Image 1 (cartoon, rainbow, N blue to C red):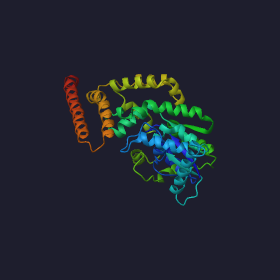
Image 2: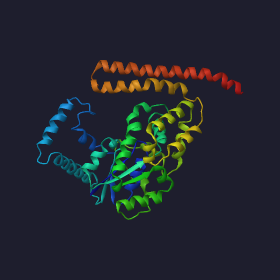
Image 3: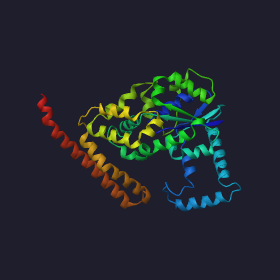
Image 4: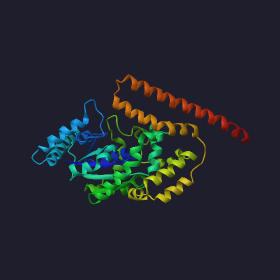
Length: 349
């Protein structure tokens, strides 16, 4: 049994891709394992908040690794054996060639995974980053601005993934979500060729029967689409179709940079031209302004709250007060927006 790792940003069609792959009789999977994140972070001094003193634990683990006969190589081997054993148990009685691990936050440890699993298969799934951002708003924010919650995923993860793919292009597969939904049979054929598996044309239809048990993954898309659909391709333009949101889109594309965009398979200039054609309405203006200005501070407060611990009454009170402040600011902004737009609407009648 050999692992397949599917790397992507969140809301990139990774659950659809996972289900299509799992429709092949030689591929097993479960929802989202996440198992490698704590295993690779256990000896990192930063990035983990815990009740125990994690940086001291990281020092202790580093000392243990240093005393192994072959140091980190022995430690990585132990991690590999443990995880592959777990994958083997997860696939159950099925005698499959591969186990697919789809965990979106593996962008944080992508180079570690290449190091620990040199013989695995690696698929990089890309999606228009503006469509990713819009899907985060629609799916996890109910249409309200919430991108301050995903700063690392939106701004840093694309570069991490592009650099990893470029470093390991010889033994990886690059796949665009847009190509998959527009030409599914061709793209599935490419995937099967990369995995050295016989092509199965039923994968494009039988994926609907794949059940991913667990709390993680895209339950929204799984419920909504019972077939491979092109409907989501341009939906982002509606979500981002306002003056303030389209301005954010321009800044975001420029901040990612043309090199990373090209590495993902997209043209920055084409994307900016599309943004320029978006609606410049003032819809959601008040709510967006309130959330853009206060939301990032609320998210920073959340991090402080986690560090202090859920049992800190002071942290709970401050977090609650700030959430109430954000909600009040949003309500006030929406009321102001409604008042200012009322004369304009009346003038049209």
